[in-house]
Amino acid sequence: MTLADVLQFLHVVSAFMFVTGIVGRDIVLGHARRSDDVERVRDLVETAGPFERFLAIPGSFLVLLFGILTWWAQGIPVWDQGTRWVTVSLVVFLTNIPFIPLIFVPRGKVFDAALASSASSGRITPELSAALRDSGVAMARWWEVGTTAVVLSLMVTKPF
Image (cartoon, rainbow, N blue to C red; front, side):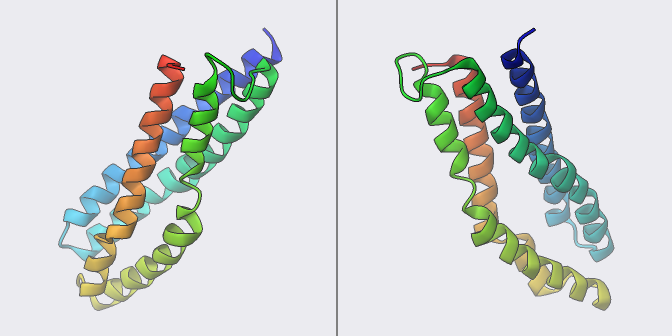
């Protein structure tokens, strides 16, 4: 077993970790969006947290790290016939990064405040309802899922 094999294995494991995190988080938060009970929403948000903190976030970092290290260890050219899918995959994956400071962090703070306010009032407030259905966050989450599907497809098919 070579270093490249170990790195590729770690890359695949981290991809499973990342995908499990985003799918688990999104399923649980989908249930939260459909609930009309603030305590249930709070419980579901707390349930979604570990998917985000322990799988999606570290998985995204590790899949990128091990992907780049595997690319290097295998000596794959940046733009050559038959390996362009690697560079395209990297570019597609990196398009998610701007969402972190532009959408996820600031709107996460708004969401946390709305949840705390709703929890203290004992009801779903209009602010929490709006935060749960934030179109910017929804678009960024769909983009994340879409780019993940594209990258996985490129990794499996290696079309160019």
